[in-house]
Length: 344
Image (cartoon, rainbow, N blue to C red):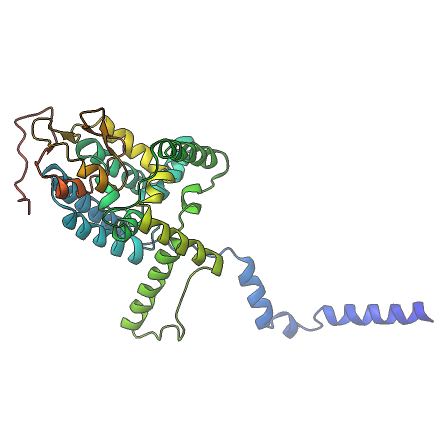
């Protein structure tokens, strides 16, 4: 009896599973089936218009050229601060912090193994700050980098210097992270540089707010609640990084940024490197106290001041504290004119 009942139920289920009439065959699928099929079809990924890529490159080029001219004329910090605010608003908040050469380091490394995986825009975005570093130093760090802009705006006038030996050890970390970034990109496509970015909640949240503002302009009701991207742990990590950046200037730039290693290399072999004119220097060593990355040191009993080209980020702090106007940027082309931008 149980077997007979099971057979009856089986044939009944089969009878309902197949259509019995032509009308049943021509019946449109149910909404559930349509949703199921749509979920199985790969969704189309809509790329941003190419015009936005051009805008990104133009904004980056303008900021780099402006910062380069300010650096070569030894302008004060306030003008670099204005450029960093523009870089933070555009690349950090409006573009979400993902349009940056730091993240493009992974893409560029992946492109070395598979050139078809990297676009020309990404390659140009990666190379432009390096070219600027060769001609004018690490001006990207204080003009267009959104991560650097946050640290630049938060840093105190005179932070707490790190002991020299510890500072030398911590400076080795970016070299390790650059090697790990290249290895991760070539082996498994891991975006290590982006994972290390502790300032992402600010950028992603700002990008979401700009999106809401755009919806409001186009007549679309925005989200009724305040949008905050990230969980509690991410925001606590951000808070710690911001607090640390107040007392230890530019902790990410100095001890974590893998792209800074490349910028430092091109700055060290570049055409324009900052120097201290020994005849004009009074050995007051005020510049060593205000340098946020400890790139200026006083050596020997006579306190001879030297600038480390690899670490100097061209922020203009030392120009504002030098009483003898001893900072110079000699060039291998003495007759090359530089646009006159008055120093205030």
